[in-house]
Image (cartoon, one colour):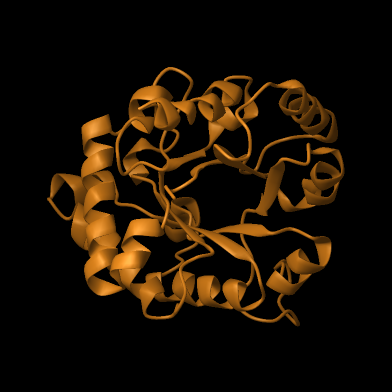
Length: 254
């Protein structure tokens, strides 16, 4: 059984009620490969989760963009894993570079979040990735290995984790890692998991790519053997997101 292709749509801090309804309608009317071929997860802002959950087609799933590191309580502005479970939200994105960089979330803090979310029954899209400065200094693998290691030290089971490699220099910049660059990091990440966590975890964990993925570049990226899907930002708000979902068929025809 191969790794099922995974496409996540991270809407980030975007949208109005009207825009959300329009996007969900576009998704609902689209002809896309079956659930056997691709797993699609949509991640709207917190305030739209109930609306999207109500309107979204049943073969797509839904994710929150973040959650708190422990049980809820006196943490103004935070949303707990328990609240997401209560709403029936199965997935959460954790460790996105925007939170690591803008809100100073450390490797250990992200790892604690991942472990707690998993303990409450959520599935996690865990993000790793290097900055341009780190890439240019040759530190890419050291950075993503350290980010992954922090998670591995907190987590015993990886079946409910999707690892998202997002080179920070490619997020929202229009710059995209070449297919060869993406494959190289995905291959090394998989090898790291095999050596440091276990052969089965390395072989079965889906490693998806994020960073200016769009309708024009998705097929070539999807064809890479260790690229198991995408975490899509800006393009997930546009009709071309359908083309990105359809790129999953590259794997079935390869």
